[in-house]
Length: 309
Ligand code: CP
Ligand code: NVA
Image (cartoon, rainbow, N blue to C red; front, side):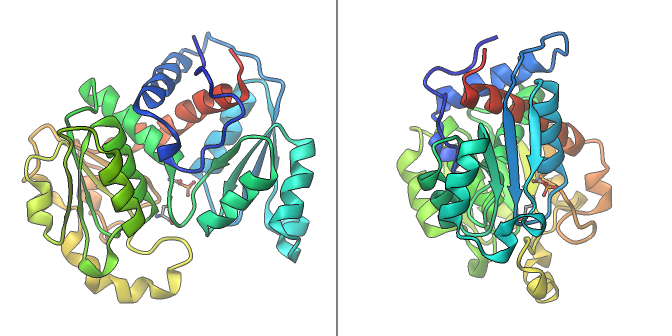
């Protein structure tokens, strides 16, 4: 069992902070850590500073850290001075002196970058409006477990060009997995992320942005969707339903994918909106395996960023 060279002390603000080789090493370590007889010892403290709700990320990071022998402090803004407006620059410099590592879930990517600027400990992106890198590491592990590889496969994503879509696009470019995003023209992924993905793209890897779900789904190995209204967009949720209804992942769409295709969703899911119950609970769905893998990849990430073998 080996953690990643040169990883100790780094931040994970974007999935693009990792190379293809580092992603592969992390996933190997995560697979090894599924063996519960391995008991790496980590006497460190992880802080979880979440400005948005979370079930999977909060619990999987906490359990990962407990199983590694470490401790977790939940720094919910409602019970800290953060919620009363203490600046990030001050909070970061103080937490830096207590914690060994900090995972932040927030709105603006710039706020996450401010944490990383003022803190010397590793800062992990636990979701921002721009990206969700920990989710995508779990997705890649799930795809690798199902197909033996992710390289050369095609992942097709349907719905909103949001944080999950942005990170999938970057990850596909980095690791050599074709990514097709089917989104309305009004809800495209971030243009800077698209440009970054184009510049990082491995030779032969295809990035496709289309308005047409029928084009995106043909022969896809992975059919992926996420909610139509992300956290912070709740007021817009009803207005979004007619805009996105043509992008629903349902049985009709799925039959046009590869016959061995798997279905992924980062969860939480809104049944009968972005995905039907039939597909979410169907035999091609791997969403529970995908959710479990959050814990394994984050364990590998924690050990590697903390430099623990
Ligand atoms: N997929 C995911 O990040 O879920 P939570 O919002 O529950 O953490
Ligand atoms: N795009 C969703 C993902 C939740 C895990 C959101 O940001 O709310």
